[in-house]
Structures are given as structure tokens and as C-alpha cells.
Length: 79
Image (cartoon, rainbow, N blue to C red; front, side, top):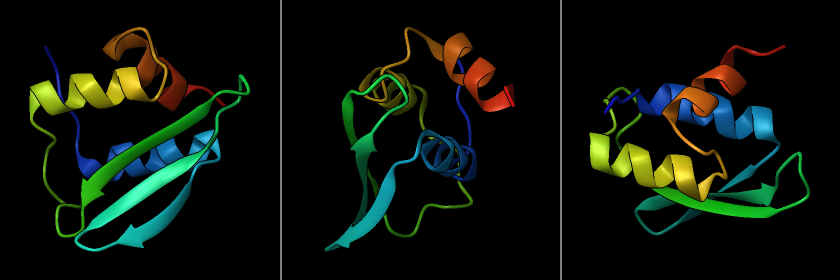
């Protein structure tokens, strides 16, 4: 089980075309992914430099529509 930093997660959200909006103490990233599916995930406001706990990371990976962590990182490394 792996993890990544919230900065990397934010880069993937931007690359997917998701848009950030602030709601209370969270940022919600939402929008239509490259496959045409609506995706939405949220993160706490003050976590940008930290690593995502592995369980949370796995949930986020699934919420973003990736089959597994490997697909997440392949998407990050593509074009």
C-alpha cells in the first residue's frame, strides 16, 4: 500500500480537469474526468505539504476512477 503527498494529489486533480472550490475547512475537487464521468473528492484546507494516509489515499484513488495506485501514478507520469 502506497501513499503520496497532497501536492501530488492536487496535480492529478488539475490534470484531470477538476475544479477546486472551498467549503468550510475543506477543498472540494469536482468535475468531469477525461472519460466523461463526474468525480468529486475533498481534502482538508491545511494539508498541502503532508502525505496522504494510505487508507485515505486508496479511497481517493478509487473516488477519482482509477483501478489502483499504479494507474494513478501512470496517469500522473503521462503527457
